[in-house]
Image 1: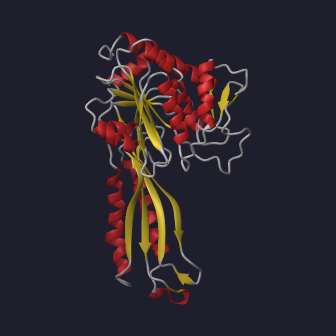
Image 2 (image 1 turned 90 degrees about the vertical axis):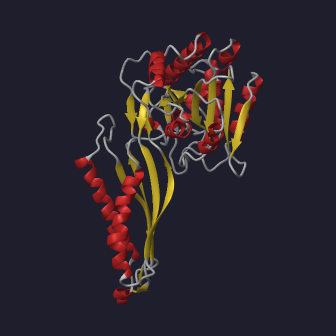
Image 3 (image 1 turned 180 degrees about the vertical axis):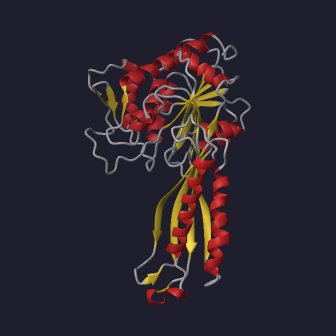
Length: 398
C-alpha cells in the first residue's frame, strides 16, 4: 500500500499481508493459514487447523480469553475468486489505497474484515477478556461453503460453542439477520441417438431438456404471483435460474445426452426441495413417458451440486441487539439475497449469527475490487468496541 494510507499502521500492515496471499479457491490457503497460526502463537494464542481430505487447505479455529464459556465468534472465509480474464488497473494481490479506496482481490470479500479482526489481537490479549472471542477462518466458501463444514463437524462435538457469531461478509457495516439459501442441481437427460434423417427413431435429449428448462421458467414465473413474498429483500421472493447447458455431438446426429444445471435461491423459511419436486414431477410424469414410448432406456436424472441453508435470525435476537449497540445503529436489521456461511453455523451447531462487515458486495468479484477506507475504519471501531465490551462484561446485559 502507498505511504499515504489513511488506515492505522497495524491494520494497514495486516491488510497488506492478507491480500498478498493468492488464495484463489483453486489454490491452497495453507500459506495464509500458517501465517495466521504463527501470528496468533506470537501472542500466546493457540489455534486448531482443520484440514481438507487432501491436506492442502485448512480452516483455523482459535479462542482468545477464557475457554470455559461461550463467546463471540468472528468468522470469515480466506479464499477469493479468480482474477483470470479480468482487466485490473493494478496488481490484484498488492494492496493499493487511492482516493479513499483500498484496491485488491479480496479487499471487500472478505479479507478486510479478517484484517480488522487480526490486527486487534494485541488489544485482545493485553487485558483479560471476561467473555472470549473465537476466530473461525474457512476455505472454499466461494465454491459452495465447502470448507467450513469440516469445522462444523468438529464444533458439533464440543460442549462449549460460540454464543453468537458475526460473519464479516461485505454489508456496508449494516447488521444483516437473514439471507436466502441456495441449492444447485445438475440434470442429465439421456435420449437415444439416431441419424438426423430419421429423427423419429431417436429421442432428442436436447429438445426434452429444453422442455424441462421451459417448465423451470414456468415454476419461477408463478412465485411472484403467489408468493411467499418478503419485501425486505432486494428480490422479494425465491428464484430459479438455469445456467450451463451442454448437449449434442453433431448437427446430423439426434443428441443422445444433454446436461444442464439450475439453482434455487430460496427464502430462509422455505426449502429448495419444494421447487425441485415441482421440476422433477414434470420430468417424471410428463417428459419421461414420452421419451420411453420410443426407448424404455431413456431417462431424466438429477444430482445435487453445492448449496447452503438460508439464515433466519430473529430481528430481536441477542446477537442482533448486541451488534447494533456496538454500531450505535438504531435501524432495523436488514436482509440480503446473497448467501454466507452464517446459515450453516446457525443450522448445524445452533450458533445464532448475523452478517456484518466492511464494503459492498457490488464491488466483490469484479476487476479493481475495492473497499472504502471509511468502511475499514468503521469495522475497526466496531471490533474495538467489541473488545472493550468483552473486557468489562459478559453477554448477559445485551
